[in-house]
View 1 (cartoon, rainbow, N blue to C red):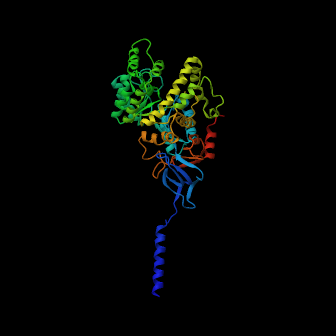
View 2 (cartoon, rainbow, N blue to C red):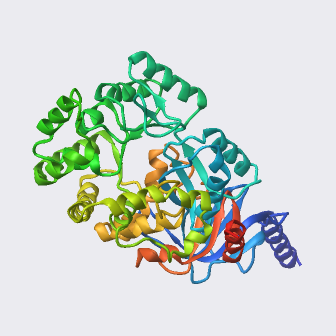
View 3 (cartoon, rainbow, N blue to C red):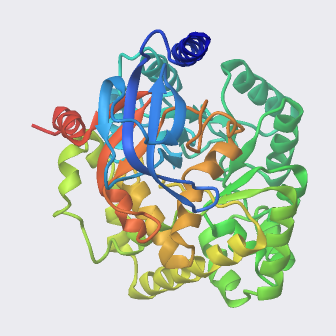
Amino acid sequence: MKFFRLLFGLSLAVLLADCARRPTKLEIYDVVINHVTVVDVLTGQLKPNQVVTVSKGKIVGVDPADRDSYAAKQYVNGNGRYLIPGLWDMHVHFRGGDSLIAANRKSLTLFLAHGVTTVRDAGGDLTPSVFQWRDDMDAGKLAGPRIFTSGPKIDGPQAYWPGSLEVETPAQIRQAVDSLKRLRVDYVKIYDSKISGEAYLNTISQAQKRGLKTTGHMPYSVTLGEAVKRGLDATEHLYYVFKAASSKEDSLTALVRNSLKTPKPLGLFAVLPAVYDTYSPEAADRIFKLMAKRKTAVVPTLFIGKTLSELSENNHVQDTLRAYIDPKIQATYTRRLASARQQSPAAQAFGRKLEAKFYTLVPLMQAAGVSILAGSDSGPFNSFIYPGASLQDELQQLVVAGLTPLQALQAATINGAKFMGVANSTGTIAPGKDADLLLLTANPLENIANIKQIDAVVSRGKAYPVAALKNLMRAVKNP
C-alpha cells in the first residue's frame, strides 16, 4: 500500500511540475515565419528549419522549428525560403520642391516592394515632408522604409541644388550646422558645387563638435586624406577616392586651388583624365589604409555610374518600372539624357573607361578593411535609377566588381546599421532586433540576383506577402 501511495505521489509531482512548465496562456504573435532558413549576414552561416516570431515590431525569437503550430495574427510559410534582414539603401534623394512632394512619396512604396526597409536620404529640399512621412510610417498610416535624413545639404554660395545651406565664413558654418542640429537630422551631407576647401574642412570640424556624422562629395581643392583626418565619416561615390589614388594628388590639388582665382576654374571632370593617367596602386593602398584606420566608409554607387555611362546607347523607353515613376519625376530625367546625347564619342569612351576603373577599387577597399555601404542614388533628376530596384542592381554590380555575395549583403544590411549607430537594434536577425525582414525563394549567398526573388517583406513587424506588395505597386502605377 505504501508503495502505491509513493507511486501516486511521484506521479502527481511530475504532473504538477509539467503543468508549471507549460504557459498558462497561449502567446499570440504578430507574425510567425516557420520552417525558414535564416541567413546570418555576419558570418554567412545558414540556419535551416527555424521559426522566427515577431511582436510589437520586434523579433521575439529565432528558434528551431520543433513545434507543429504557433498562434499568430500573420502566419508566413518559410518552407524552402531564405530570410535575410531588410535591405538598406544608403544613398537616396527626396527632392524637387513642393510640386514633387506627392511624386516623391510614391517612391516609398517602390522601396518596400523591392525589399528595402531602410533608406538614407542624402540631402534634398523636402525635409518637412520627410519628417512627416517618418511620423506617418511609425504610426502605421503609411507603408514604406525607415528614413535617416541629412536634411538640406551644406554647400557654398550660389549652390547648385535648391534648398542648400550656403556657407563661406566660419560664422555661417556654425549657424548652418546649428540649424541642422535643431532640426534633429541624422547626419550632415556636404556638397561640392561651390563650397571652398577651407569651408568644407571647417564644416566637418563643426559637425563633429556637435556629435553629427558627416558625409558627402568633396571639392577637388582639398585632398581626401585631409578630410579623413578631420573626421569625415563617409565619402559618396568614387571620384574622390580615385583622386586620392593618384601619384600626383598634391600637385593636381594645387592646380585646382590656383585655378579658382582665374576666370576658368578647374572642376572635377576637367581633372579626371589626369587623375586616371596618374593612378598609383601604392597611393591607393595608402588612402585605403587611412580610411580603414579612421573608419571612413565609402558609398560606391556603381549602378548609377554604369547607367549614366550607357545613356547614349540606351534611352530606357522599354523599362517596365517607368510605369511606376510619377510623370513629374520622369520629366526630370530629360537633363541627363540631353547631356548624354551631347557628349563626344571620346568623352563617352572615357566615361566607360573610368567606370571600369572604379569597379577595380571596390574589392581593394574591401580587402583593406574600408566599410562599403550600398547606395543607389535614386531620386528625381537621376535618370532611370528606380527606387528599390536600383539597390538590388547595386548589389549585383558590387559582386561584378569582386565582392562576394555575403560582402554585398553586408554592404546593404549590417554595414549601414553600424554606420548609423543602430546595429544594436537592427541590421541582423536576432531576438530584440527590429522586425525588418526580407523573405526570398532562393539563396542570395549562392547568387546575389536571388535578392529579387521576393516572397514577403516584413516592415516594422508587419508582413507584406508578395500579393500585398503587388497591390501596393498597383496603387502607385501611372494611369
